[in-house]
Length: 285
Image: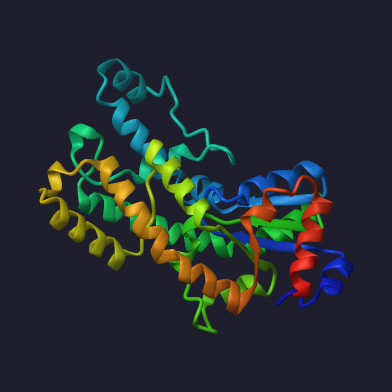
């Protein structure tokens, strides 16, 4: 690891970490605290995906919807209006909207094959955005003179790495430059994540074989044709399956490549000093 003890961490002029885990457990919360302190650079993998790698696809999706309105279509054709995503670290809904949900188009769904195509685009974007971390570490120092760097990963980073492969190309590159830190939730966190997701379902990214498995199982269990699937119901159903599927892989990343902190401890962090103390204490164990 980049830091093998609390003294390594405390003495380091440059503190560089990569937070990973399910969305909603505190990755962006911590990143915003550190950025607000003024001496940490915040790199959001999701933001990079949505701007650098998926931005054109997202904008084209908006334009396709606008072209269905004759008034907007004429303005688009004449370049009288400009349509683009307003991506923010705290609001990645343009990316979620593009990924979509498979199922009944009358309920906002898209065909499963189109969903697969968008998932594949997201996979490539995720790998590229993850490895771009190294570029942004250099950029943060050279342009802005930041020594400290936090990589705020997406919940789906676990889908593009193999934590049991010591030669994994993504993890090998990253671990030369950042300390991977898993934010582990307790069982009550899991139920809260499911409750939040049920109230406001969001599109998710799956490894393709697992997605096929979930889709086929859902169709069989619900006895429904693909074009009649309720998109929100499938995403909620699939979300719990995905939580269960990702957990051991998150744990393996932490065991083989980094460290683990508890979501309950992360929620108590209020300053960069609190965060530094949490990492130092964890490295003692």
